[in-house]
Image (cartoon, rainbow, N blue to C red; front, top):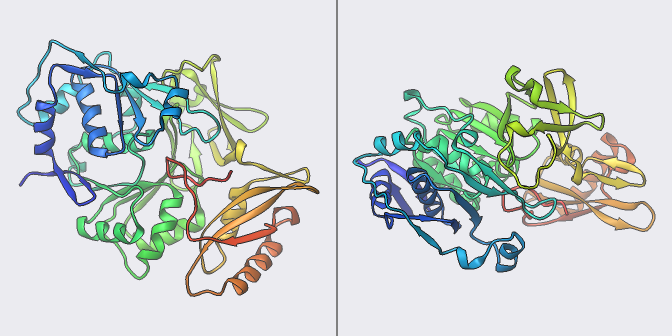
Length: 413
């Protein structure tokens, strides 16, 4: 039986079909860009570029012409093909993967999510993209949920982890939560990596059900949520939980069993934390960027130092809210409010205020059966009891869904 490569919507793509498409993909040509939201086309393009050893740029399929123009990309080049003399034919996927490891000048260019400004180009080699990928016979049975945007760093790293072990990928990014429950049960998922927002959204649909086949649950892209961790353990009782720190610029660098990241000895001289508590990474650990002029890359992430080799992520500096001269970390407030029974998810953001400059607004997704008026009182009381006055949201709104970025993170602006 031909092994599954990707499940997307109602279509199943096998490794046999992938092999055929690689052998027949207008062989003899290289491509400058992949601009597509279809994960199969994105992955096919990446593998093809690796096999023929040519550089490739990945663009979000929903980038508008204006966004593409602002990135400095000539739209006329999006469909350009460059002739190559070499033509390859592969008998099986083992041959494909062996060839991939013989890459020479390959580079994949990605764009940052643009949450704090215009997206920036970042080029990565095969080595930087697969820095923490593990390939071994013991991983042959893994079945991966795919819960990230396929055109961004986190998604591409999950793709490589699955593909290089010839594992199935079951696409869940942007899908309805009820459908995700069906996919998890149908395909008996063993591994999943996603944002905390994704886990919060699916947990209400998993209540009363446990998934003993789940072996590994990985958090990435957002601050780790200790309260959410306990709920995850109930849904996936046999899973190991890992927290990963990664970025488009550096890929995956740090991992933790909870919220404390460890700086491995080989990275110690390439990582520093400033007096302002900002995490900085030496350029030698990064991909290639045309905009990085200094030796150290300022991540924009505020961290708490535990000791010389351990730290906790606190927030993005750009997310901090100034309420009457006090700096408020919205993630701290969100994590506290999530402890109120009946709240499914919440985002805390700012609103202009003539007195304090900014005030806090909480958009809340609640359980359907709860009364809005009563829950609002409970939220206010809980927040007032556990938070300093300037951290208490002045406006509480109930919403059906929260806005998320292209990478699946909460929008706080």
